[in-house]
Length: 106
Image 1 (spheres, rainbow, N blue to C red):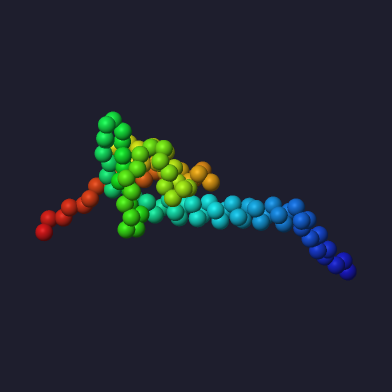
Image 2 (cartoon, rainbow, N blue to C red; image 1 turned 30 degrees about the horizontal axis):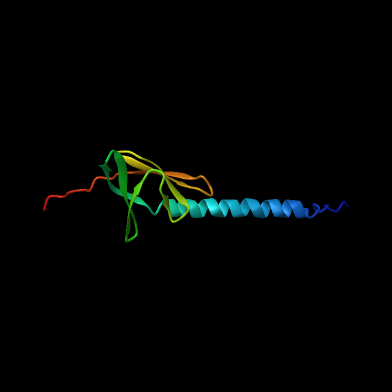
């Protein structure tokens, strides 16, 4: 009867490569979660430059294109209906749409 042969253990390079892939996946997940915490509250044009009001938890930020948030998130673009944010370490982008406040008749 033939015994099954176990595959050889992974090389140190394979172990390091897998660890790097896992670290990258974790970083991307954390970046997605961080970007998802922002919402667009409004925008204004001041002296021809669009500024957006962003909310995150209880914080409110007034930002313009090219500005950095928390040292990791670039405000890539602002227009009348959305803001595009990019996490600079992973290059993940999120487009946040301006949401109109709902009004209900009492």
